[in-house]
Amino acid sequence: MTPTVVHTESHAIIVGAGLAGLVAASELLAAGKRVTIVEQEPAASLGGQAWWSFGGLFLIDSPEQRRMGVTDSLALARQDWFGSAGFDRDEDRWPRQWAEAYLQFAAGEKRAWLHEKGVRFFPIVGWAERGGYTAGGHGNSVPRFHITWGTGPGVLAPFLRSVLAGVASGQTTLLHRHRVDELIVENGRVVGVRGAVLADDTVLRGEASNRDRVGEFELRAGAVAVTSGGIGGNHELVRAAWPERLGTPPAHMLSGVPAHVDGRMLGISEQAGAHLINGDRMWHYTEGIQNWNPVWAQHGIRILPGPSSLWLDAGGDRLPVPLFPGFDTLGTLEHLRKTGSDYSWFVLTQKIIEKEFALSGSEQNPDLTNKDLRLLSKRIGPGAPGPVEAFKEKGADFVVADTLDELLSGMQRIADVPLDTELVAKHIHERDRELDNEFGKDLQITAIRGARAYRGDKLIRVASPHKLLDPKAGPLIAVKLHILTRKSLGGIETDLDGRVLGVDGAPIPGLYAAGEASGFGGGGVHGYRSLEGTFLGGCLFSGRQVGRAIANV
Image 1 (spheres, helix red, strand yellow):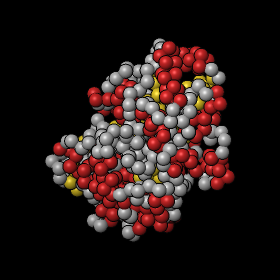
Image 2 (cartoon, rainbow, N blue to C red; image 1 turned 180 degrees about the vertical axis):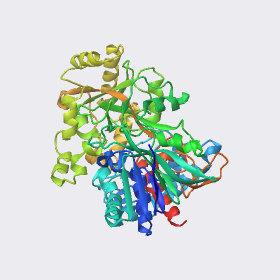
Image 3 (cartoon, one colour; image 1 turned 45 degrees about the horizontal axis):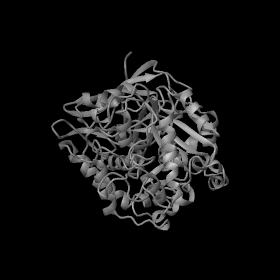
Image 4 (tube, rainbow, N blue to C red; image 1 turned 30 degrees about the vertical axis):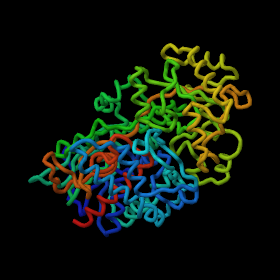
């Protein structure tokens, strides 16, 4: 097939129509530039992974925090970020600078910039990734997880409006089913892209689309921005990048992202001279559950847990301090992988699930996603949210029982490795004895009581301390938790303008990168660990930087 060569009038070509690409395009459009966006997926998936997200954004010293009695500052957030990131490599030169720039953004104009675009936030700020170590170690010292009113689609909305308005006016060319296979390099400069035109496909958002080639294309422009995402949908790449420090790669994983998050453009960018760094840094969850109504293969949903569930490994032993629900994602992943099993357990009560279980994703939170105040009001009433109850009733990973013996029998039925039921019972009884007093030595119970000192947690997030075997709190519930792939923390190395750097550290003329493809900035703005609410934010910030930088060329 002879490629269709188009010498576009566009100022830039953007590869990938996810959040970072849409933000970059919006900035270019606002500057009066013409943009071409190429995307391998059908129009139904416009917006990429961000559409499926919970819409959490990391902000520092926001009005929402202050109204909830939270005292935050740039200095405290910097302490938390760098204590979590653990930057320790020569390659962390640009990631460090991106981290500092992003912190300034999150403490400065980020909220006002989004607010001007119509983005609004749920008034109660969430406390994600709490850490549990010393003040200078990993974790958020205070709540910083701001849930967007409208969740992921609400974050995308202003940028989609901008791009689609550009399509209507002729300022934007949006090419779906155009898969980039090569960056065109001439005289050391990236001058365009070429690849395959794929057959049309009527699949729904997130479903796997065909890869049938029906043509070829070539596009040229003054700049190319790679905003194609990470590797979370490609389990082979995830296992190949898996670091020894996290134990052995799991034999079985769920996918927290669609299959099109395949990492192809990372290798294609490398072939054009881009320097890929920190590929061994990754962010996967240990609280994944099988979606009873899947959209893509091995579709998993993450439980966003409050701190009260008893967390056990596959054999039934309790996880060590401070690996409590919601405290240290990668610390928990490392511990569980070194036990050699691909799953773990939560043991809890109906009282806990009603107040503490949220499910990650726009589709699992119809009240917030659809801005439905009447449905939202049910969160503070009795009963678990509807999507949570649906998983409890239909999900393959849930066991519900009136007695401990029935619960243990149910856990054994769905276990893949032998479960020490006597050990599980021992941990439950030991924990419950600590509830005879308002004080004690169990640090998880101390953490629960500490969490309830925060008004937001006490209102809607953390159940009052109670015994798991208290019949008034029942029934008992066990949840089998799987490892769930999610984010790449490394990627294409860039400077603060998003210019892609070669192995010699010099910018490659004409080539830029943003979003997860660039490790959310610089090739790894998070270092080893995320503080949560920083993935969408990293796409926003890096996309904005790239769009503005290209517009000024």
